[in-house]
Length: 305
Image 1: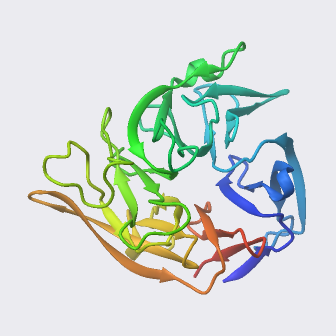
Image 2: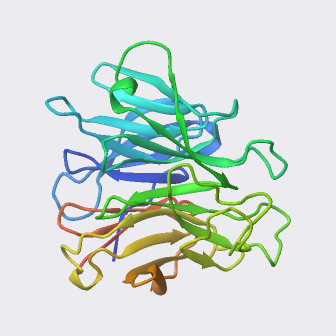
């Protein structure tokens, strides 16, 4: 393990850029921005931090959209909605269903559409947390921000989002706010379009007659699952296609093994990386190395072999 950079201001999101550089979202003191970490001598440590875009409202998740024949576009999930950074312009391109927005994570699906997670505004909100879907072409068209299509509902605080090798969409959900309740776990969910995941009526494993969809995996109260990714196996080949998941409330990164069985899929959660303060996002480098963002220490860590 090495420290890539320790001078970041509450980093909360990370993505590998098409140029091979690491891009990080910062939220300190409301001065939201995205920066690029520059490793000029390729020693695994960033010598400087270059601003990419500033003036964002609580940015979190990052992803890259690569339209055919066009320059890749940076997607940023912010409190205002979905922001796109294109050559020569940065603009709010997509709105979520609630007036508060609260976009947390963003990913480009196997179908080429863009999926954005949203948290409920509070534990008494009329609109539960959800995942919204956008047509990529609509996001890249000049004009007013487009309204997302409701894809799933019934989450409390949909957070990280990742696409499996088979194209399935996985989302983490923080089950509660404050004060904590011992009977409300955190969740990892697999999305089924049009599905309801239960909150606020149901959490954890749902009763048979609830009409809601149960989680793929449960985590102890206060684990606060956040960013996640499906690992390619290019460097740590034994973990190919496993899901790596930042548990920001417990200071560790878990590895979730997804197993196909006759009755469907099941998961086994393994300890993977520990000893951090508040790991909140994970990314994979061009050689298969892993990057973990620790929001509390302002650091990005690099793991390789």
